[in-house]
Length: 556
Image 1: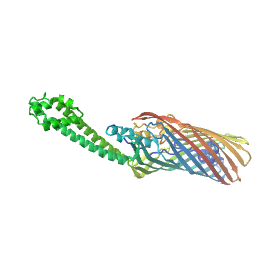
Image 2: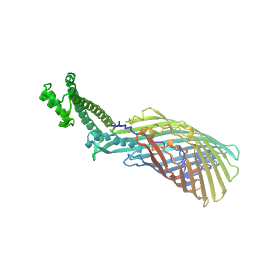
Image 3: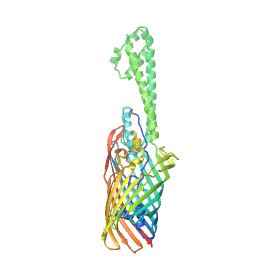
Image 4: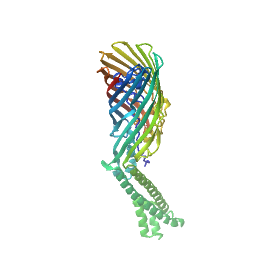
């Protein structure tokens, strides 16, 4: 029987992100959701998007609070041939996604504070687990196919299991910085963001069952019982080998005396063996499947050879059955319930610089650079039946650097426009191995980046009056990943996001913003190679719907 391999899946969920890079959330304000382009902002959300532009705000205190509600579906369609059902759905829910900004502006200086989920910020639930959880279980069925050669009633025809996984990720960003006006046209910014971060994973594999001859049975118990039965068969085969071998050995003295060419009847007639011995040898041959006519024609040498061959066959069967029994017992141990409950925590710092250039009142040009955030997360593990999250172990979780450009135009009373570009320096980060490969038994590949990721967005605001505006915008992004990056645990797809919303200036001090966006991800079809079944494809998809609202208040 082919050796069974049951590699329990790795519990791993990449940091959730909603608008931005592989890890980074750029959806940091309601204004962004309604326009999808804010890199040249001169409003209070410039604390995040264009901090050098804060110098354009009026002197005084400015405060803002925004929240978003986000719904994301993550779909995996696996073509792995042994799965019962290759469709998997993960639901990400973020009821509250808060961001807050504060600015104090005085003459040539502006001091700012920002707070929000710069990465993650939600939880994902996969009620059926993921293909990488289930694929190792599917391989048990063909691995047990050889049992039918022992007994057709042992035919294993299918499997079932209760799989679940949930994960959450939140990388908070606490940003402090200062903006200085060099001239009427140029201002600069320097600041730092502190990022305390937490990932939490919980999952289980329970109640693995096998379909044996049309009946569902608990995998562990059935395999244990079957192993015991096969051990009994091995004992019988071993005893038979010993008996047959002993009988063959007992004939050697007669053969050495020259009786090898005599039949059993001739040996009995000549008095070399008695009737009882003849009957015993004949009965043994009959049990091996020979006919009486065949036995009557056999000489003693042939009889001994038949017994010796049968003894070796039984001995081989005994050895094989003992191996099968041990294999089933080991597999039974692997079919028990497994659970993981762990949390990873750590923190990092992100240096940030920016420049804002306003050549005239109509145009504004902004640039910002966020340095790579070096971060290590430490495991705090309650339960780890898979041995994948050793308590106290550390894992790398760097956040890529970002270079951002923005151009804003306010040349018309009724129209404002912004064009934004973000480059995510993904090639500078070690993304580690593809955990999918490790879960399915394939050689683990390094997760690679073909080119640095980018986003380009355009937003238009139509000023319907001095106090009310309507805006629309769109954002396209492609993170430049290679196929080796993709797995059902963590994947990135190119996307397009339209957004729309309103701005209502309730008073000179109080402003309300609201918006909605819908991210459309382009499906990614990836080929995986399994060491047992060969290559197969999976289609990885996402959709994200976001609602946002915020209030800003100024004290002049």
